[in-house]
Image 1 (tube, rainbow, N blue to C red):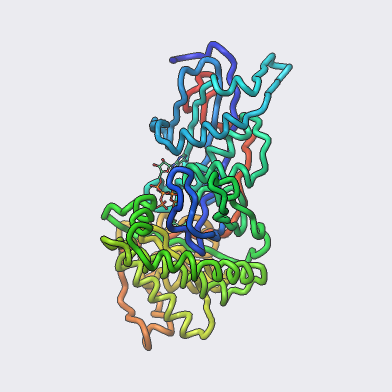
Image 2: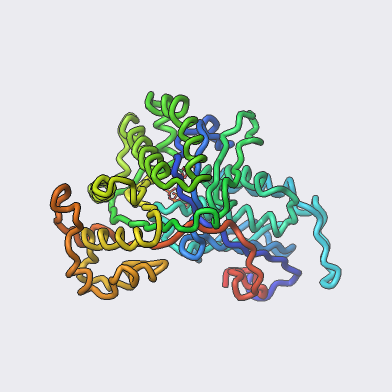
Length: 421
Ligand SMILES: Nc1ncnc2c1ncn2[C@@H]1O[C@H](COP(=O)(O)OP(=O)(O)OP(=O)(O)O)[C@@H](O)[C@H]1O
Ligand SMILES: C[C@@](O)(CCOP(=O)(O)OP(=O)(O)O)CC(=O)O
């Protein structure tokens, strides 16, 4: 189809955030329905910094379902996309717009085709959970377009079938994915624990760590762990249930010390499970280990945790600081140990909420060069600097769940052609 559309077209646009788990999901009991072997808890990241925006359009002129991701056409033939589309079509409602003379009955949705355009405001292949934001956004925007009359929890069970962690991106704040026990997965859904205003002191700094090697995907990594790791079985049965209860308590009470201990312990146990997998999977690299060391030594020096860290299936560090003051001290440490390489400017080295840079008194490359080693360095950690080992940092905070975008200029599909703008 080229040029003008010859029939009507209906569109919806939405934006959905990514999320980072503090109690990790690792292991499925059902590969097709994506049912996990344990509950997990995450926080949602501010969509201004890490989110997917998706426009979905429907028109009798469209001949097949098509999708463009970051401007490039991708195939929708994979089982995960097909499962989400089928589940949503099964739940579609009637739609009528008398002024435009449009009527779509429930059953018509099965014959109509979609054009879908999505854009991630962060790198897609950098291990920053783009699939979580992407599938949450796909399901949320299609549910709006098709008038699906379901609670967000039920939509989360559809997003789960795109990528497990995506179910948690249907809510803001802190979110629990309950594993459920039904064979059809109807009770394996996300629930919001608290919204993003409950604990608004927290500041998040993500270190995107340079990595050249191709990582094992989460999907195949967790399959191998289920098949070969006895530590994984022990973790799911004997460790996680208690940790979930403790984590819920620390979030409810904004108890940072307990939150940080649990978050770091759970990340480390997840990576221990990866090592216990045969053959072992190494997601973290030397820079990741160095970051853990810096945070651990600082926390130890202060006597109570200042910062928590967590790592997903890759070398990037996600650090959570108890408040803005701590975040500035963390940023000073990070920029001391990992200054930008000579070809970088500060503006492209620290992304997201740059006001933390100003508060840390770091407004020029010179100010980074003249940073002193932190107090704990002399006693415990080497003060060697590693320019170039981190690609960039993102400063952000916990944020809200998916939203519909109503402005025409926010749509990614042209109302004239039905194709990406
Ligand atoms: N905006 C989007 N809309 C729909 N699907 C997306 C979107 N962004 C990413 N995806 C899907 O997710 C896949 C990438 O998922 P993958 O798990 O490999 O990486 P990731 O989620 O960025 O990293 P990780 O899971 O390791 O944190 C893409 O190939 C695509 O199928
Ligand atoms: C380490 C993790 O980030 C694993 C996420 O795995 P995915 O949700 O990407 O896996 P699939 O369900 O196979 O798509 C931990 C987490 O997010 O809980």
